[in-house]
Length: 510
Image (cartoon, rainbow, N blue to C red; front, side, top):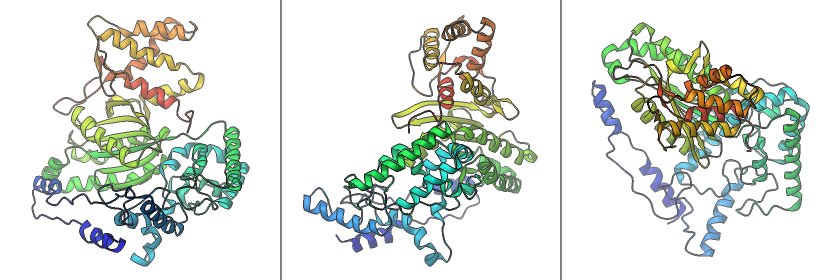
């Protein structure tokens, strides 16, 4: 089947429109989740973005080497018109994915105004934000030199206005550097011709066969970036935060309170973008009780707390304890597929923060390329230490300042809790119940003192362990929706593993 036939078939059958007339919110929700039309999975080679749909060349590459070469040539020719950044090596798209990808380039002609997709922060850019601020402050001249070299050697890599979108100010020296494609801040990405194609990179799947001159250009860019990392004293983090929030009990609140709920939601939505931007993040959407945003790791927990407080203040006039908001926060590597990050975020929001923890909670997960590293949950009330300070940010300054805890000590906490509970489960999100009479503080304090070569007093060590165990204690809501005091006998090691991750952000290899 040819490209036109595939294109027409997909475009004409893609859209599904459903509607209902009913004042009952439950009926509307039922219709929303009722799927009366499920498109069949198409034949041929499938789209690399939307896997149920056929890619539009129409060639099936498994048939023969000749057919595979024809398919490669089709996408090579199409890629030449995009500059290489809009359509990456190895991507073969269906008509819907291609339209979504290329729409910003045709938006002004199609709808009368330009869609500025080029200044939308990528996951790599959001991960690098804290380092970008440091680099612009500490090494502006080297930043300007690096940006000039990148813009000379690569096409379509300038992202005008992207730094302003996340609240980073620039000047004449740093503007070019702060508005580059996010991949160009990572040394490993510069090694990868798919992530960072240069002007002389071949437009085919053999891009790794760059000529010697192009390889030398790549080497020079990488060397300058390494010099910049040394000048700054740190490298950009490879992880970013994906935050998703959703109001609790919204159906029943709307049914009972009506217009007052709409007013409260409008007030909350009006503040979301400013709060996210103040934390150097970008709001993907904010409507009613729904929020989706990307944030640098170091600001994400604080931002989620401020949004929760804003939601609470917006609903103060309603005086209903059910008017809470829950959140799922994922810390993930920028190379983890966005679909996987969103799937995990929805899971910990709906199944963990809402269902398992009783709503009015935040669930935090670290998703590495190798899989889930930890999963921690708490009610908003129990994550706060004092006004504006959460459990993690209360401990992180001392951890980063003099490396109070070794990597092995974090794992020894897991061993102690396992021994005192008899539970061998180490699955992320699991809890252990301490055996009656067992107290972990003394054992952990002794191990902590040994790791510090007994330079810490017994009293100070025990105080520090109690602070750590606060992070490990389970906090949830009862059946009436009220926050319960943390259960110090029901513990998880995910709290300290999350603390370990946060303390090492920016030190990991990209």
